[in-house]
Length: 73
Image (cartoon, rainbow, N blue to C red; front, side):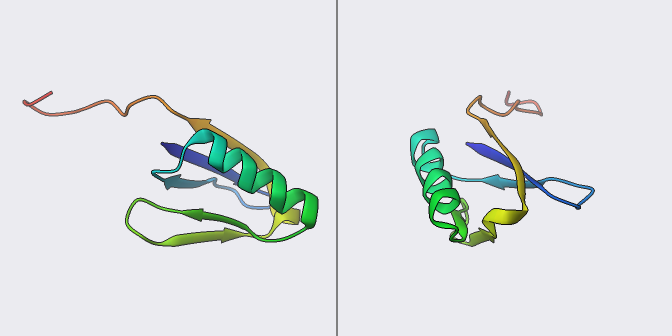
């Protein structure tokens, strides 16, 4: 799943590809906003993205499959 995180005062959004479900992301975001703790997302490659909750402008969840390109599509 692809997650787009809008950061306040930043011209571009942060895009993260993760294996987490939409429900897991919603729960982590809700917890981070309610407790004023860092919003943490694990990406597909094993890395971690940390965003301070007071800087989050929006979070967009895209569960659709990415378009495939090339001859094997």
